[in-house]
Image (cartoon, rainbow, N blue to C red; front, side, top):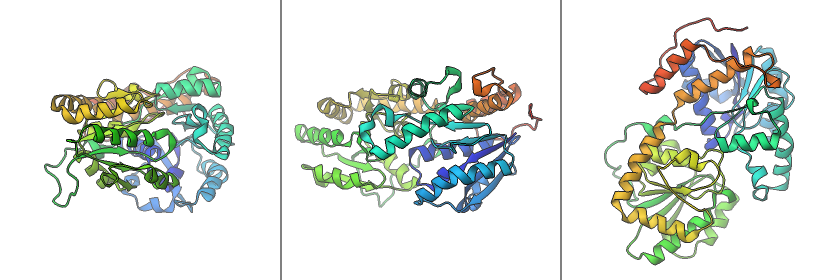
Length: 411
């Protein structure tokens, strides 16, 4: 099977969706050496060691970070021609968007429908465009993959799809966060005690409530000197949020976008991770914090409870006082803190990339071998021998090994 990958996401800043898509494709080419992967992406990816594998072919194009219009036109018009030229059996778009008029078999990852559930958070142009494009992409695709039951239910309702057309595959935690931590802190680490938030600064992330809760926490508990650190990509909201900071502004630090190693350091040295989001398709940051050994306080909305389970303390995203009190409870109770850390590590282990790769590969086989896939027809699953090998890798949590060579069924 020849699998084409829409690599437009690789020419974008690596935030949540892009990070997850990157880890998915990297995991696929690591564990599946039987099938061929054709990666349509930017010229910069030619030197990326993750793609230097016998079963990966890179087809470079002149798309670049920050050139949204050029990249969009490439995705809609150039990518379908390249996919046809290289005779891919399936074209997989793992980061929400895909060529709208592609005529071959396609798999599309749609992470959430936030623009439908809460349209007030988006510009008129954005929500109008996505309300037009997303349902059509979903209906044209042989399969839609999404990353939580909450998002799957939204897709079935909004896009009017048959249940068998949408597969739910949870995301997983980057290996970066599950590696054994180094002992101690770097000698130049300037922060000793802080609450951490990681994510974009946009309305659905509910940053205003977090700031209010932090100020309330400090005002009611003078003995608490814990700082608040916010890590997130630059946006116009950055300046707006800064202006709303009144008290304790010297202890509220906006760090902007940071690289992976710095992000890992911020996670591992944090006293508490808080994620007050109003809506998530999945919500990776709480899991990253758990894998890093940090207690988590987050909200009881959308997909978050199904991801964090009982390993985090859940609050209403609209109750500032409850959020402040819960943060104080964790900071002031070592037993609760240690219990959350232990449960969090176990919860994060449930989400690993071997399982994601196995389930995604099963979707590929179903699409490839089912002529009626576009009408919700019968299912053909991943061959058992290969499924068992992937399952063993998942259970052993070992480094990926080469799968046994085998002739895949189908074309």
